[in-house]
Length: 324
Image (cartoon, rainbow, N blue to C red):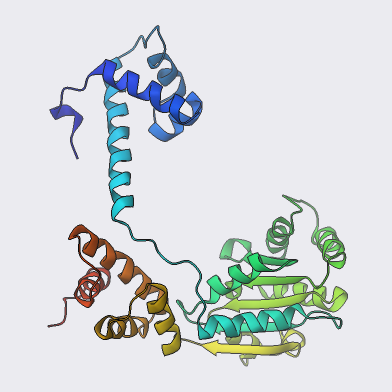
């Protein structure tokens, strides 16, 4: 990467490039300004026949820096491997069977709970199911939307109602009216451990009122809240409606081997390294990061991905020395 202070940056060359870049990508000057960090007024004048009345060298230097960024990103894209998206594994298939059961049939929806550790296919299974079947809505929970009104707003957006305002009673009526007109609707709440007690009771009321299916996916905190002694009375009505549950802190070996297959990895040493990392907290997520970085290391050497690349990658990711 070159510093502009050490280079003779040609103003006209940068002017011609930014003009061609804007036209070639069918962008407005406002859009180019967002990408380059150069004010729109300055940039549009710089790219006009009149030119910029201010310090054109500074503008040209910034254009050059943006060109370097694009070149760096292009080089990274060439080295970066194609990371497999969703892939079937034993845990994902079980989670999807839970979601099918929750979506219900003629008798209406049901309630299911999955409490899993990170890197166990929970979120990818939920989003894949939501994108594969009609009337399934994925809602990602966070501390900022734990309360009833904020949770309702997230659900309204997922349902296509847009940004809505109103009292909790009004929003519940809107949501239930929307769901009531759908066939076998299912709401998937991911990271459900963030939901407040009031929010959990609110959605339990939706289930009772219109039979909407509910899936609560999260970490072990979800099950601890529903089953724990201090909260058991608070959630007795919801817990009694849970028909299927899964508790799994780490991926199964079959899940790890499915990840290896998704990456087209078949060597015994490589599979053993995937199993080793995926058996640690972080599961398949950490193993995927290791594979991605290891593949980039291998690509830089114009060589296939090996267990040695994986070990080097994991040493960097885990900040530990590579085992001898």
